[in-house]
Amino acid sequence: MRLIVLSDSHRNYDALRRVFCRHMDADLFIHLGDGEEELDLLLTQFPDLSARTWHVKGNCDYDSMSLPVLTLGLEHSHRLVATHGHNYGVNSSLEHLKALARQNDADLALFGHTHVRCARYEDGLYLLNPGSVSCPRDGMPPSYGIVDVTEQGILTNIVPVTPRP
Image 1 (tube, rainbow, N blue to C red):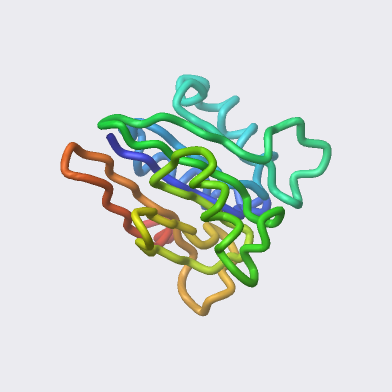
Image 2 (image 1 turned 90 degrees about the vertical axis):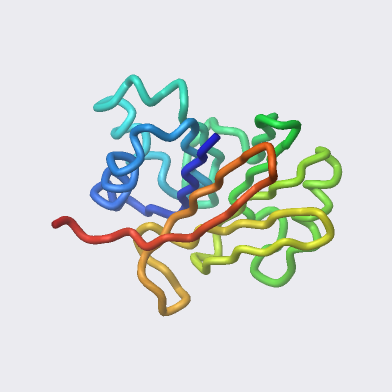
């Protein structure tokens, strides 16, 4: 099972579209907030992706009715929790996020908000912030995440959003 994880597109429709188009065969797409407007536009242009696309509300997704936290069961008895992160203090610590994951019996926690990529494994929990597909704050190129869930376990990767050829 392959998940494409994006965050913080901040009205950069082109970057969002490039990532989706590169991974049309993915099982799930998860947007971690601050980009609901362009995500809605993309889904009107590619309606067949709607059933495979999930998102959470970010602090800049004004007037959004989306939930701030998403929990999903995955293949091979894995479970994820996804949130933008601003309500869990991810700028200073991941402890509240880890507590959220434990409360939801998740072994994968996805978050955004900081625009800084992060991929860690701590105490049986995979933590992934894919960075920002449009405006990273870590001096690295814009990025997104790929999560592969297999019988052997979970593999997380952060990859750059490459410019149009």
